[in-house]
Image (cartoon, rainbow, N blue to C red; front, side):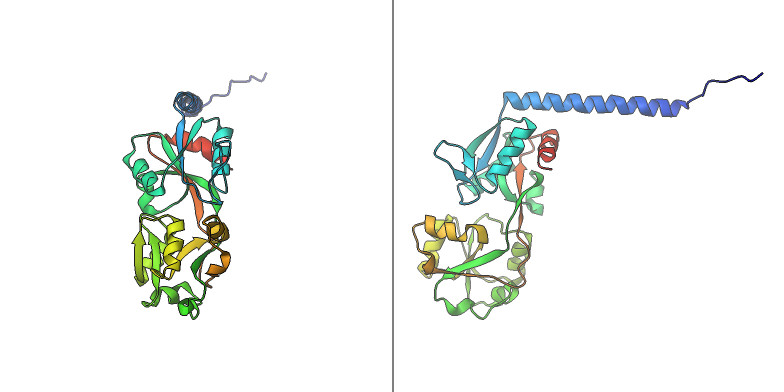
Length: 258
């Protein structure tokens, strides 16, 4: 006669399965709790008007190359948000102070910013950066690479205070230490400075160059664009949030951005 014996499962396996189920349920409950909190307190979504990245429409909505995918991510994740227009430098200061549930859209990711902000997956990648200078300015003509351009101390670079041009360009500027003038001005005022001869050029994404010129009341023929052979692919842009925004919310946004 043959007897069948019950299969004995090691207690360690049983405990592992029970613990896994417990922690998965806790994670789901935690995510739901985070979502309920967000429903009561919409996240402030900072932007600054910059064609074609973030544009305020007549209806008051905000659209553009970085604004639209950011808004879609929040809506898909079911996380309420409220647009708030703010200069970029103040965005950095506010998110660094970490007093509000707030995020900025279209940020570049740098080691310095990662120390105080939480970043989502990328929401957009720029085309390669170019330089804008005054039409007829021959100082830039002999430079086919960014390294050559930044090495020339007779050419003055115009930069915006507190603004990152991406890890590669920031690193190159630090390495070659070109002649430079830094201002808190917006891009329109920077164009005026270029035309007035107070600086020779500044970096700009190719997407916004023409819109920037025409929307500022200038003519495209007043400026010249230039590409460089060693300029890498465009920067990736992200949603950057204060640490008042939980990692659970960042996870929900990342799932929406897949």
